[in-house]
Image (tube, rainbow, N blue to C red):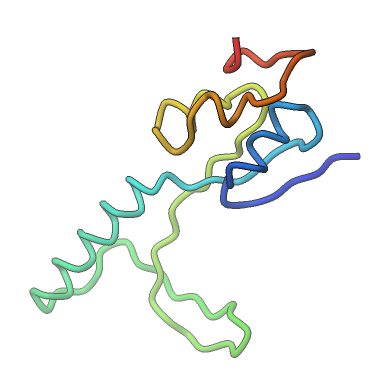
Length: 106
């Protein structure tokens, strides 16, 4: 049964390496930080935020300007992405992986 998650938490990434979870959606905190800094500078200068879009999909349907960063689906084939980014160590991702070992754990 396919199982997914979001935020690429450490336990989910370990389950992906173990083969008990299919995917987790992750956003690189470094990219989130860069986007937030750029937005903060634009707002401090009284400028419009470039690249923002209107969004009203929240629980109360309130329209707001938003910036959407593309999430990265993390699977067994690209577990190295989160390890290389420093989000999580190889030891945490690969803990307990002894069979059908993904490339990132070799």
